[in-house]
Length: 258
Length: 289
Ligand SMILES: Nc1ncnc2c1ncn2[C@@H]1O[C@H](COP(=O)(O)OP(=O)(O)OP(=O)(O)O)[C@@H](O)[C@H]1O
Ligand SMILES: [Mg+2]
Image (tube, rainbow over all chains, first blue to last red; front, top):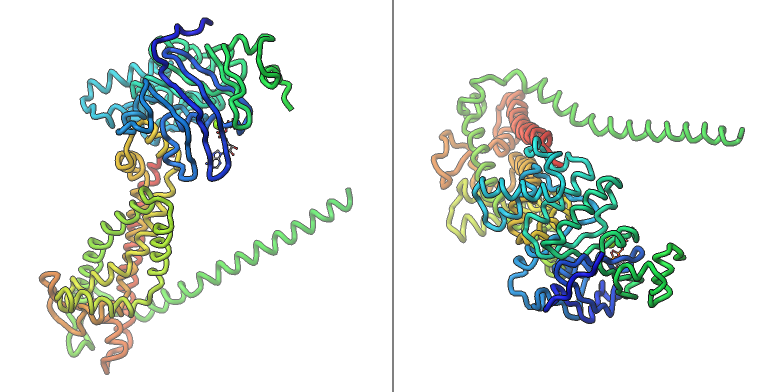
């Protein structure tokens, strides 16, 4: 996989980011850039701060009172903390959690929710969006006859794709995926991975994964987080050769981590 | 091997003992309810009739029916519901969905819990001071119902807050992540999934006020008033006060009469409970997660 063409301006610029829960430091000294149309992988063991990092990107830290964020994050060149309307920022950033959250609504309403929040009311317009997003999430064929049944009745793997369709329905510029395959079988995982590769044409993806090989398959560049520190950022292929800069990265990637 | 099975045998006996103990406690709990109901039905049953329900008391309340009291209680509970539900639900929404977790919120929560413990006679005096005198509602349905409403507000808030908090936090976060505001999240996801719990909880709590006597005695319920109230500014008879009056204040009441009144009162409360439970089961059968 080739790295994305360097663009005039990265989509995401993070500088000296530090995240605290109360007084405990969860992540510090993260400086990185994510280019447009790049798939940016983040790997690292449990508790290394990957989820915390994602949460700060769309300012979900607001909803965890103990969480405080220092440093600078620019989205499209604009400091996200100066963004007057935080809701419009979040609409540009789709999020998929480790465990699928099928809202207790029908399949159709799950995907139509975000457009409706954005003020789209006409059934015909919504129909188009719902079908397009479900198709892009590789779910349409399985649910097209049961759009009115509850989203939470779908299988786990289907619900995860429903969550992806819902994230896409916002029309995001950036998609944050947090260990999306944790509750999904290998076949479905592969299907979703294919979807992600295609989405790359249109949007930028930050992919947190605990499967090192998944990062290898998908990510152009990968960051390795370890106990609250960003140890290394490199083109993904380099991480799997002997060219790593840090011993710890090699140990983790090769599964020799104690 | 032998020792292990011996131990298992002992565990099994202990287990059975505990089970029996809990069963006995549960049965003990039901006994008073059954006794009360059967005494009421046995003694009060004979006076029940359509006439009893739909005529007014006569001969100094020693005979006749209970119609004005029945209607009065319905008025009082309905107006109390109309006042306490919107305020209580709004307060609970604020506390559960908006309020930051700081000392002020915690103080308010503590106050609400304590407010639920204020004796009803204190509420009665507050009602006289506030609604009867200060707001000049006089002794009226309005004053009495508002007193009942104030009294039930804490439990309405607590019941509502519990229903709201039963909605998984992940639903809210999924919604916020989509760029929904707090209100959009409440309207689209939180309320639709908690409204059944809110309504039934609230109805259950408020229906209990049908039995309250002290808060309405000085604020709007009349000793004897053989007319139906025409508006919320009228006084009214009420079942609970009527029961108190004919049991203790009026000479020459036949023994069966108070039991009949009590039976009707308890049936009203049970009927409201039954309705709200049926409603809850209906909504729960459509529960979505
Ligand atoms: N709400 C919270 N309050 C306090 N500490 C938290 C909170 N959430 C996370 N942490 C702490 O922050 C650190 C980083 O957690 P985070 O969830 O970001 O890790 P992660 O890399 O996503 O781990 P995993 O791979 O297990 O998902 C951990 O030490 C965790 O205990
Ligand atoms: Mg995580």
